[in-house]
Structures are given as C-alpha cells and as structure tokens.
Length: 77
Image 1 (cartoon, helix red, strand yellow):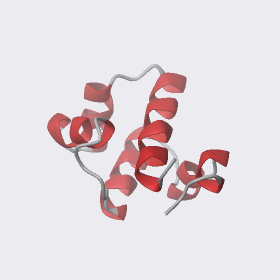
Image 2: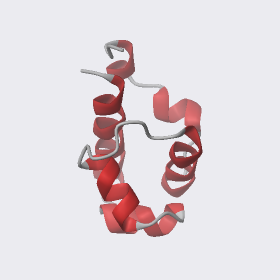
Image 3: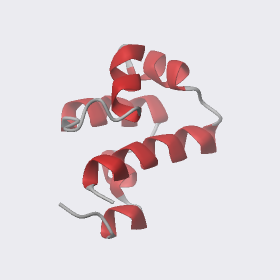
Image 4: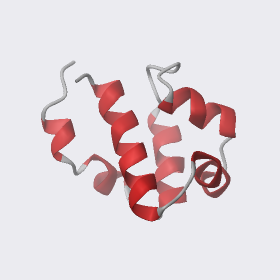
C-alpha cells in the first residue's frame, strides 16, 4: 500500500469510527465535499499537509494522531 492509499484508508477508518459521512466531515473540516471525495476516491494522489490538517480539525484529532496508525508503518513510497 502506498502513502496515498494509507491516507485514504485512514480517513475512511476515522469517519467510520465517528459515524461521519464524507459530506459531514467536509463541512466540519471546512473543505469542499468534492475535494474530500476526490481524495477518498483516489483522484487526488498528493494530499497536502494543510488539507490533512483541516481534515484532522474536522475529526477533532491532531495530525500526529492521524498518522499514528500501523498502516503508515507499512506504506511504500
């Protein structure tokens, strides 16, 4: 799994844990639903750290918590 796929899986995992839809997360994060959909659908391969930070704010977690997952230990470049 590459880093882009790991980011997608982590977003979906955290949304599932919080019972949030992609639309609800986009509203909470202050980013457009289409941007977040592009990320989770794999249309965007290089999600910027500023966008990940907004997603983390919408999820109510730190960026450190976002990347604190075994799936990033297994990510390939």
